[in-house]
Image (cartoon, rainbow, N blue to C red; front, side, top):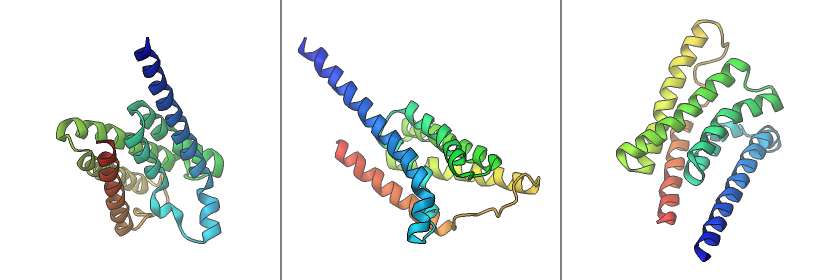
Length: 171
């Protein structure tokens, strides 16, 4: 009898953790424009949607990571009108591909940090190839690179460092 109540408590704790992570992700995305204006820095340089997605990948379930990947861009668009619908779809595709690649590579190479790097780089390559096609087709009227590449590399290194720390704490 005691084992059943213990498993229920663990499941409830995991559910509560997922709810808190999701609420935090949506709240953060909601506040990014205000934070940017308040501190007068381009907060989008830290890739807030990817940051939230990586937290979900490392601390919640696969299905929850997919839910966040599929909903954060639409949530941002509904609240702020940004990103525009074609870019919203592109970002949704990129984040969803990031989740897929992450779990694919975790199973193949058995290293969370390596899977994280590989999945982010892979999803970004596809993102930029599709974005180039959309720009050339005049569907998007933006530059190819919005966040400087050096900032993307810095953020990837920070995300990977966090993944190392998170994995060490779990062990």
